Length: 167
Image (cartoon, rainbow, N blue to C red; front, top):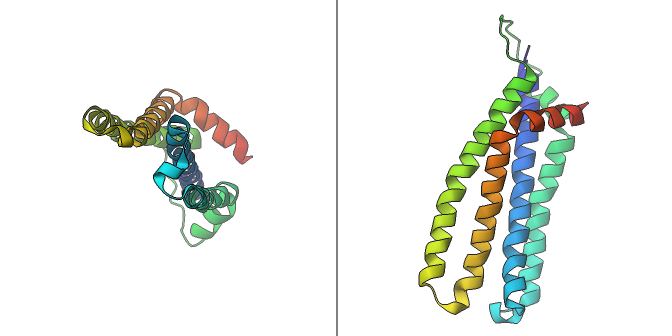
C-alpha cells in the first residue's frame, strides 16, 4: 500500500531527476553552439559565458543531488504530522511511480515538440550568425523528446531502478 511518505519520497526523486536533466540541457545548449562555431569570442567574452554556464550547471545540479540523496530524510520530515488513512487499494509504490514517470514524459514531450518546431522555424528564417544557437535549441529539443519517449515507454523499468536505488 502506498503511504504519504512514499509519495513524498517519489516526488523528491522525480524533482531531482527533473533538475538534473535541466543541468544536462544547459550543458548541451552551451557546448553544441561552441562546437559548431569553434569561436566563443564571437559571442562576446568566452570566459564569461563559460563561467556563467558552469555556475548555472552547478546551481541546478547541487539541489538535484541533495534531493536525490536526501529524499528519505526529507520525506520523513514532510510527512511526520500527517496521519495515514488506510484504504483497500491496489496501488503500489511502483505503480504510482510509473504513473508519475509517464505523466512527466507526456509533459516533456508536449513542450519539447513545440520547442523543436520553433527552433526549426528560426533556422529557416534567421541570419547565419544566429543559426548555431538555433541548432543548439534543436539538439536540446531532440534530447527532451528522447527523454519524454523514454519516460512514456520505459516507466516500469525506470520505476524499478528508482526503487532499487532507494534501498
